[in-house]
Image (cartoon, rainbow, N blue to C red; front, top):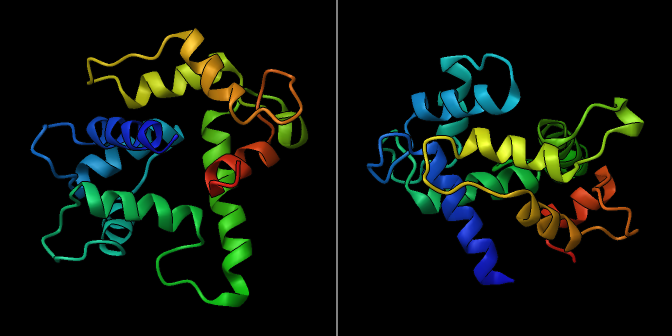
Length: 164
């Protein structure tokens, strides 16, 4: 399970690192977020997000810093306060969930194998690695607590929080 998570994190990092230099710039972060979210992300927003985890101050994210960005998103931000952490965490996870989910409104939205494959295809488009539908089914199966073949928001939260 840990090895699989490390491999997935490396694949996501490689997808964001468009020029393959081992660092993610604000422009690369912005471009990948724009593709993933389906809406424009400003240069200022991308730079601000990058700055929250840029430990060495070089304006770029190495793989370790990039991993901290993912952890910050799933744990309520890099410098969140205790009172707002749960709400911030939930909003961040909800936004991430909607990137992967098939249409279905707030209550009916689900991550299906096809919607997961579509989003991973966008994130990994410059990478040689492509996810097949069966691989996406297997990924969903690991966290599909009710056995319906799709991930609800609650199941997605369990997956992102590492509680499965």
